[in-house]
Image (cartoon, rainbow, N blue to C red; front, side):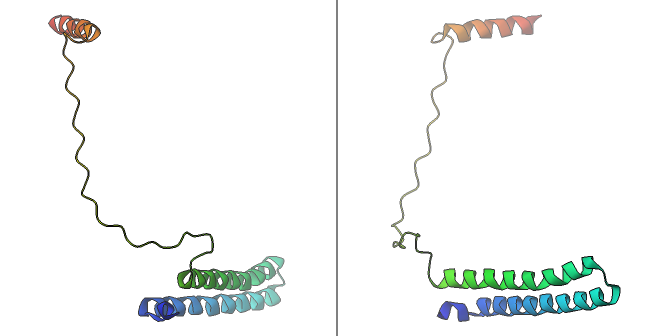
Length: 117
C-alpha cells in the first residue's frame, strides 16, 4: 500500500479524481442541454458521461490493485540473475572463392563478359 502513496502515484490519484468529477459535470451539463433542446442525441450523450467516469474509475482501481499485488497467474518474482558477459560477436563466414563453387565461377565470368561489352 505504501507504493500508492508515493508522489508520482498521488499525482495520478488527483488526475483520476479530477477527470471523474469533470466527466460527471459534463454529464450534468449535457443533461441540462438535453432538457432545454429535448434532443434524444443529447440525452444519449448525457447518459454516456457517467459511464465514462465509472469506467475510468474502474480501470484506475484495477491498476492500483495490480500495483499492490500482481495477478494470481503471474509467476513469482525471482531475484535478478547475475550479469552474464556479453556474447561474443558472430564471426563472418569465410568468403567462397570461384574455385570452391563452379556455379559462382560461371556467374562471375558472365558478369565480367557483360562488363566488357
